[in-house]
Amino acid sequence: MATWMGVKSIENVLELTGIYFSYENQTVLEDVSLSLQRGEFLGLVGPNGSGKSTLLKIALGSYRPDRGEVRLFEQPIRRFRQWSRIGYVSQKANSFNLGFPATVWEVVASGLYGKMGLFRRFNKAHRIKVDEVIEKVGLTPYASRNIGKLSGGQQQRAFIARALVSDPELLILDEPTVGVDAHSAEQFYKLLSHYHREQGLSLILVTHDVGAVTTYIDRVACLNRRIHFHGDSQEFVAQQQKILSDSYGHEVQVVEHDH
Ligand SMILES: Nc1ncnc2c1ncn2[C@@H]1O[C@H](COP(=O)(O)OP(=O)(O)OP(=O)(O)O)[C@@H](O)[C@H]1O
Image (cartoon, rainbow, N blue to C red; front, side, top):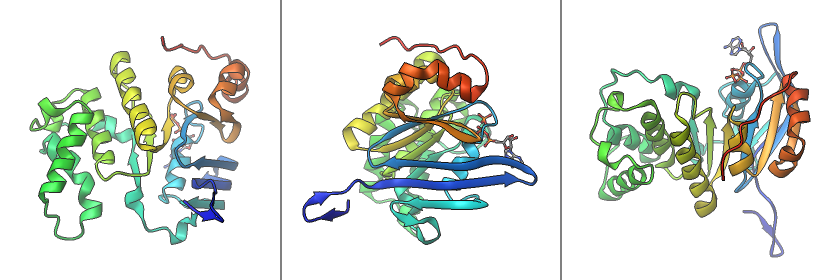
């Protein structure tokens, strides 16, 4: 973290400024600015097709915006090289190829490749790390099982473990609880909350589960082509019907989590 005369300045792990993006002739993002400070847990909500996944892909450098600037860990994205500081779990993890011949352990261990260089030889410390993360996500009994033989929720936990095994500072999750039952989703939010609180992990969670947003998350951004709200989750809760009807264009029923 940058310091000047002993005063800690706040570090943005992600900063998007004035982003515009179109697919062929469809404008998907218009003047979107959003930032995430170190240690923040941001929920990104918005209706289907509102540009959430596109925005994440821009943040991760997969797409280049038509206009605007992306900064990661205070560096312009074109100069950023430390990709192992960022973990990403895409929506596609939900539709993983069930025939893929790898065990849970191997899938999780593959998350270390980025840090290991060319020869990819696991030493004892690597193996301990993989075992630890598998235990944290509650998959120890399934470690040697083929990933395709797990339930959707268990597979999802394996993909989170793969993203966490390299100790990222920022974790980006695109709708990780789709197709996961309510109890598993709750466990999953608790796990994220643990990493957030205990290890200061910065998180962006794309979700349609507005109830989770209000329970576990510090800040909320509501996107529908433009940012319709960006602020504290308390403030979001206080005004959520208005914010959601502005951005979704209709009344939204909010399911409260029971805490
Ligand atoms: N590769 C693509 N080519 C053309 N159009 C696309 C492409 N990907 C997404 N779109 C369109 O861009 C818009 C934004 O899509 P995006 O996936 O970013 O939305 P989203 O908010 O993540 O949606 P959801 O909540 O349904 O996952 C949608 O209208 C979508 O149809």
